[in-house]
Length: 326
Image 1 (cartoon, one colour):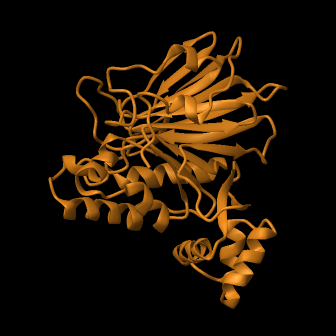
Image 2: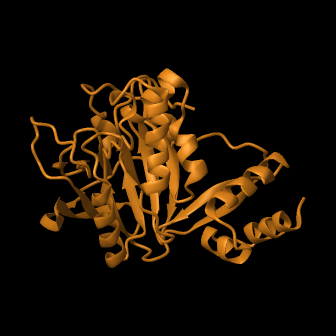
């Protein structure tokens, strides 16, 4: 093992964050990724520990390889009973109506508001829908890697959608693997269905994907939605559906790819979840943001849960029609 990899291993075991490792070793995020892969091949396994302050630390595993997962544990460090994040969907990078400038506006807003976590609900690229070409797909992925905003204090937690899946289906190009190997600020929840666990509460993220989740005509089972926040990509518009025990949000597109049947402006949502003493979701506060040359607040809403159901597990969420793509 090289001297720098020995130091890297020691930093990891001491609980250093990704930011601290990069600064101490004076290496780039891509170089860190390469060195982590080298340690894995030498028998050292690690899993992410993600915090709401945008920092990543690593926990050692007693195994060489760690199976891909569609679930994530979020640690609260900024406020033990509150979690604030920005969410949007359907960037469709590579489409003629994509708009990366919108992302820079949203990053500026997140920075100003002290938001360290962005949840992207899928269709990062346009996939095979723009052009039936493997070269086109790789250009779209390279555009994400080189032009998507980067901030060392902001993490993107992303669930990949149906447009992201078509390159895997047709050309065996796994955008999840490529993006996360090149961009240390992207944390993948896989394809189709993802689960974020926070204290004893949960966020479920959905984006219809062929062979990995329910079809666009199939709804998330109501018995699973109780006491949880459901974020849905794919619709390209913002809508809210609540009941005493449920809250389902269709997350808006941050691109200019707007469907005529649901005309709206591109945008995002700022969401704050408050947890009760048992660590369950209590209230959700949301700010609707729209983009028309600059960022505007278009409205607010609040939802309070009346009761709670038992927690979901990844195995439950991804069973039967909801299957993991590895």
